[in-house]
Length: 325
Length: 184
Image 1: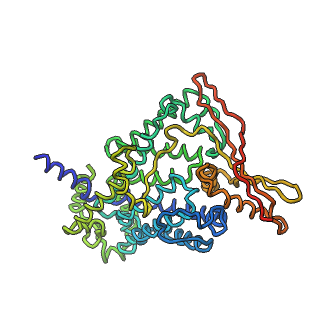
Image 2: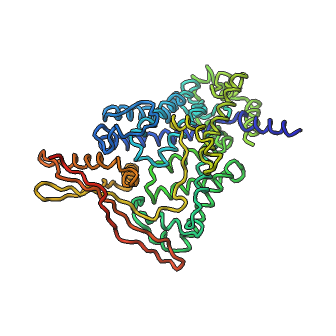
Image 3: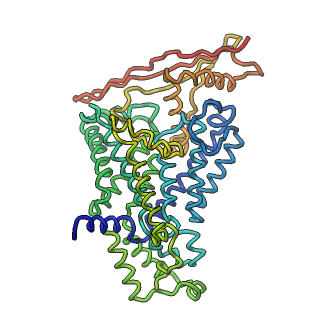
């Protein structure tokens, strides 16, 4: 096989070979939950942060394109109510592609009303919301699937092309890689940066834990450990043997940062992004086993959903196993 | 046949690959999307400067890349902005950002701290008059506006942890950076 044929084969496997949609469904649900809480928390501070009499008046809002100009408290509340509806539809899996696009437009419109209150979590939330709209997130564990296939459809995922998911994964890895790349300062090199970061009072969530800021060994382990995990997440997530370990390390990194620091929705959103790296075939097998333990839904069976025979099930599994290489 | 694989169960994203036009659209989306995700993160250079307009459309619609967190080092100052409100009768009050609980409230608190972090900067002085006026409006007493509102920048300096495990943090420093006065 020549080099071009090898590249063609690799590209086809990377972007087009179908695999179960479970990881996308899990990411969709987590992003929906995050948008829900983002909107609810924002709704509580509309008057002070976003309304016509807010601490940043409408004329000083971001001069970037805002999709929809929202200047009054009632307009913002309506947009946030729509975002809550969108988030519930995304979680439920009811026309998720459309609702993800709606959510993205509303997130940008609301966020650009007061750009002084945004952090990286707000930015990655809208980035992943948009990118997930380019993926078939409704092809597993969704209301759409339940309506079409009945309860049986909830235990089986559609086989989907992963081209859109690759953009989501690229975005997630880029966040880690460039977060690592930018940390070139002497405090990171010398292994003391975590001590400084955890002493910043305006970022403390539960106060200061002394052992995490003045024990040189623990601080060095946390500082260099953060760099190592970020580097590995930014470069090795597509290496299948290490993927489960890296997902666990990534989730632990975010949970620990989130537990100690005021980082908003960054951790939740990145965990949602990490879910797209889950092993689709392992989830498929687990869900099928679970589905077999459930009593059959006779009304659906008779119309659209015959139990798979041994031959077709084996074919399906071997296809997805090849796809996940 | 497996329900998951039946033909009418194929989603639109996957079905796009069944036609040459669809495959073309997917190729363009992947190429443009990858560029918009990767290129804005490149380190500063002449090449990057030349290309900067190429990801303008992505940033305009809201796909923004900026992942330099705690870099190159964590900042060395804790930051606070408070306001001193003075009334005609000589009494004084202070405004501080609201403090929420560390559970659910943490997901509201970070926005106020981000605001403090940005509004205090000298190159953001065009935000100061409206911010101070907003503080004044929050402190109208019996229909009477405060006489003045002074914005105060506060900070604690944190030295890096030393090899022998010593940390050194200053007390709060203060600097008054803007005063709003009621129209006479």
